[in-house]
Length: 188
Image (tube, rainbow, N blue to C red; front, side, top):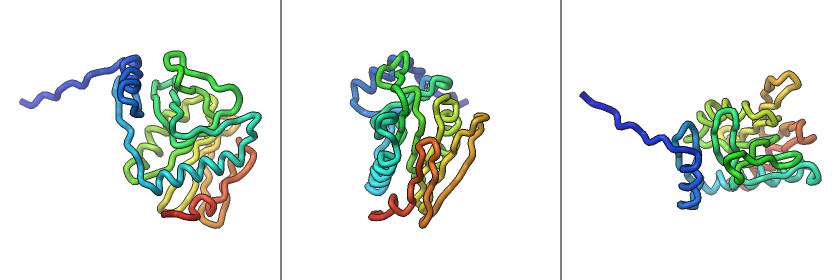
């Protein structure tokens, strides 16, 4: 008879201590700690391009754009993670247990990779949509080169739009659009 070895269930405080001790980023959910791996040079370049594009869209008096060093905590589910890019409009609200985690993003963006696409579109999106302040979830795909946005409507539902090369993706919550070609110029 084969028995499974039980996994240790970590408290959020243990998770925070592990991050502090290692200096590495980890995702936390349901008592489990998951190391976050680095990406390819093209993945990093796309994250930088999206960060710059969003920076041109936001009103700096009202909103701020953050890199993947910003931890976001989904209060409703307990997920703590580092989205590729985040935008917070208004005052930044910290998590009650973690002063380094933000709980009120307006927009979150993930650059898709073969190893994370299913998670980013599925389980992670299921967590993100539980954030009351979230107005848009942007996905950046490389094959094909495309942008997608899930934009929250007044009734709380999300509407999906996509744009490919030669098009721009409207991001109404920021009052503008992201030209797809601008992100993929200079692709590695």
